[in-house]
Image (cartoon, rainbow, N blue to C red):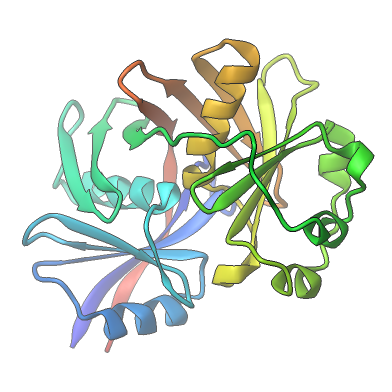
Length: 265
């Protein structure tokens, strides 16, 4: 079997920045074992699989399927635009494990409509996570939970200096950790880094699904519904976010195709 395959840098304005995602679009759904094998071969944090029969969008890391992936969704919409499947001004709704996700092709970017999660400000967490992250308790301003993930607020200097022990993190209970801070830059509202060794991603370059929780958190902290964010990974990436009154949020980004070819399966 031959499959067209693409690699896209999401939340990026130039190649080799942002977060690389694989994209595979087929008429009918592939079986899960095949999708996982392709994701392992692509060896990026997530590969997105869109089956046009039913418009079902799925995402796999090299180790497992995930329920929500922002950069994979952006990459898929970007490839659909490049292939002429979507034009400027048109929208499309994907059916996913997180419910319907709507994307709209704008002239200069792609706008995505995602769910806004509830935050738990009284959450319990494994205290050894802080040590594994190279943080002390007095560096932490707040810890909240959304879904299975934690948000930890620190100052920007501490965030940028983080040097996690990923082997130690794996011994802790967890699913994903977004460490965040107010930005010292007047052009940004907050910055973040995201760690998820439990699903095979030590540090994700740019994580749209994490910013679903982060945007709600920073809306609550600042009162702002529109936010400019930067994920301070080695590759880095920028996002524009808007928390909507409908318990949804808008994530806006751009993407660049860096690889296209045919995979023999």
